[in-house]
Length: 151
Image 1 (cartoon, helix red, strand yellow):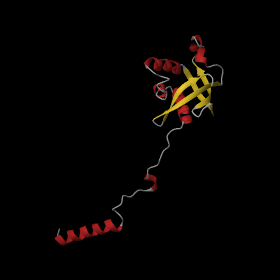
Image 2 (tube, helix red, strand yellow):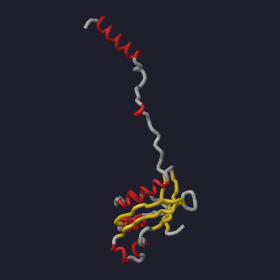
Image 3 (spheres, rainbow, N blue to C red):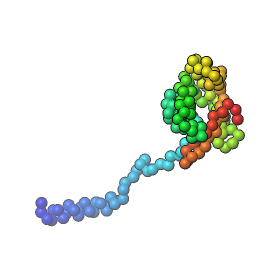
């Protein structure tokens, strides 16, 4: 190529670069970053029971605070109980006595073998079942801090 041809090509490219705004990154509206809100405390409750229902027990236990699951023994005890749930479904969530407590209405089917436990069926009786959950926020993340049979 001749020197003048190369110079012409560079000049055309240089002109196109500035004419069409190539000095700015092109971002379409669909590519702009979108702020996604963190899960709410109620989202955490729904996710917790959904994970148990799907038998994703370690993931459900990861949504429990270290106060509720302080060691591996506690983790195993919760895991045994959750594995005995044939199904568990959140029917309703109502605010409790404090800003981070909730009354949760559940529909639960427990393995029939759990009838012989010291607390038959882990205390889950004929449906619906009610549990009062307290949550705690740690580093912006909601965790289950207690599960009780009353407020």
